[in-house]
Every structure is written in C-alpha cells, then in structure tokens.
Image (cartoon, rainbow, N blue to C red; front, side, top):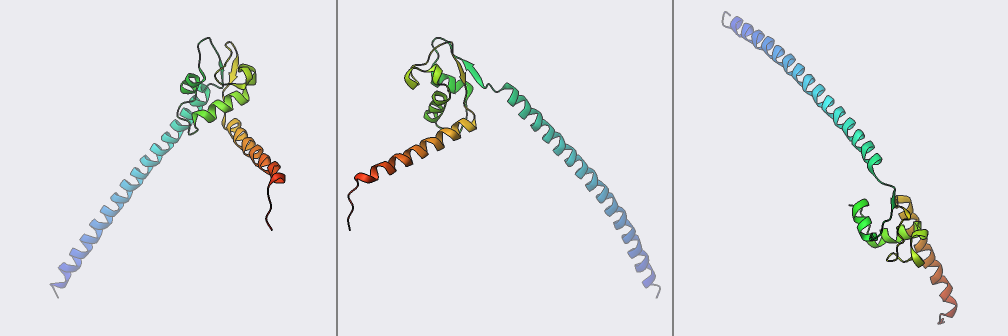
Length: 148
C-alpha cells in the first residue's frame, strides 16, 4: 500500500500543475483575444475614416477647359469603375446636354460645368435605354407576317 500513496501524490501534483497551466493559458488566450478585438476595432475605425475622406475627395462636378476630352476626364476623375467607358460617356452626355453640341461626346463646349455620373445616373440610363428598345420592338409587330 505504500506504493499507492506516491502515485496519488504524483497525480495530485500533476493535476495542480495542469490547472495552473490551464489558467495561465486561459489568461493568455483572453489577452490575445482582447488584442485581436482591439486590432479589429482600430481597423474598422480606419476603414470608416478612409471612406469619409474618399467621399470628401471624390469630385462630383468638373468645369471643362479648352483642350479637354471626355476620355481624359473619365480617366482622371472616374478611374477603376466597373462600367465601360462608352457607357460612362453616354451617362455624362445624357446628364449634361448643355455641355455638348447635338449630344455628341466629341463636341464638348469649354467652360461648362459637368456633373459626373453617380450610380443612379448610370442605372437610369441603362434601364431607360432597355425600356425604349423594348417599346420600339413592339411597334414593328404590325408589319410582321403571320403564319397559321
């Protein structure tokens, strides 16, 4: 029976050491979780600040000057948009008829204030064109030949 007591003492000592190490690991995990949370919150704040700065920096209007081209204005003020340049040209001309002769994007007047298109302008242009095309297709049905 004397051999059993050292095993019990050994088991108790191992249990106590494990509990201390587990509590130390839990404290370390809590500290790392707090650090991760603090980092996440600072990242979110930085993103919000960046988005506010970008909104302030983003130009909504442009005054044309002699020698400007619509392509260069799009490259300078509307970069990296997932919309084709031809659609952006149409949106700018559609939004600013006063700045173009005969609604031609190649004939832009200098000294005019252009409103640069926002997502609403592009959406309106796309859906308006689709609706007009659909209506024009329906007008031609009267001349169609019908087979029995």
